Structure formats: structure tokens, C-alpha cells
Length: 286
Image (cartoon, rainbow, N blue to C red):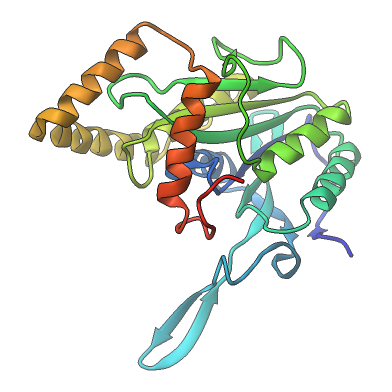
């Protein structure tokens, strides 16, 4: 059984694939928000079968009741959109991280990428880390081979990192094994931030623009980032312990130290424990 339906375009120009899925590797919704900017105004060309891919008891549809009458259901979605930026088509695969059939999904997406002649595959993600909100968002990279990352993004973290896998990583590995050049850009989110973190979305959008050599405007993300910065500054100023903690993080950031695997795993495990209920699971790594 196919996992998706596709209105296959016959006029793609130099197509590339951008992928962002929600879940624990989308801290602050930074990756999906950035991908949403890239796909804004694009055309829906593919829709994935939620009845096959999702656990609806973990991702319950939102029910709208009006005057005592059930009216609408909003279901989790995974979609593929085509957006033209300059002379390039960017296909954006984004939405809810599937609960089931990761291996089949990776196999079908590799076949799709080959059929559409995808030249590059770029994944976006965001992970919690001991970084301050007062400094530029650090971006770590992953790559199928040296030399693919653009700008000053370095592959990392250093050392060995073992964490519960996200579906996006399963896709990355499958695509890399198929010989399609693939990279990942992962923003580090201050682990003390709750809710959407537009600052990181902007950083990821800049990485996408640089990598694909396109110019996607920030839209509302720019103002959202400014408002959030003011709120976080005010919160830190109002509490001496918080202010001292942020200052310690600033010292680490100014030393430009890449995180070690052991340091990063502690922040990720804390994030999973605290956000587990929001993500539809126990929040505990296996």
C-alpha cells in the first residue's frame, strides 16, 4: 500500500528537497516554522496517508464544537509542497512526524527523490542545549560527506552522541545511502525557553537561503523574534538566579565551544522528560 498520493509535476527546475518534521527534534517548533516560510504560497503536490502513518491516540485530532454540535476535525498532516524561489524549485516535506512505517517511508521517499531528480536533500531540526538567548543561535551540521555544509556551519557535536532516533534521521541515512547529497542544519535552543522560538527559525531560514542560494523573506518571524527577545530579557532581569545562569551560558558561548556529546545528551534527556506529554509519548529515551 502506497503511503502517499502525488500530483507529479512535469516542469521541475533544478529541484531540491527540504524536510522538517515536528517532535523532539523540533524544539521550539523552529524547524517546521522555518520550513513553513519556504513553502508559503507554494502548491500542495503530495499528501501522506495519516491513517497509515499516525497513531491517533497519541495525535488526537482537534475537535471543534459549535453550540453543542460537533462540526470540524483538524487532523495531523504530512505534506509535500512545491515552492519556486528564483530559478529553483524547492520541494518541502513537512508536518507531523509519523508514528509508524519509518522504513517503508524512507524507501518510498528515496524512490521519489530519484524519480523527481532531486539534486540535494536538506533536513532542518532544533535541539535543546545549554545556550543563552542573548547570543546568535548556534547551528550544528550533519552531512553525508565532507564539504557539503555551507557558511561557517561545522559538523557536530564532537564525540559520540547516542539519542532516541527521530524519523528525519532515518530519512537522512536512507537518502545518503542512495547517493543523494544530504545535509542537516540543527539549531540549538536554550533549554529554558518554552514554546515557539522564532529566533532559531530565523537562523535556520538563513541557513536554507545560504545553502540553496535563494532569498526567502522572514515574514512575521522577524517581529516574533524581537518580541520574544524582550520577554526573555525581562524575565532574566527580574530574577537574580536566572540572570546569573544566563551570564554563565554567555561565557561558554563567547568561548565558541562546540558541545560535547555527553553535554548535549544531558540537555536532550531533560527536554524529553519535561516535554514528553506534549509529544504524545513517555518522554523517556529508550
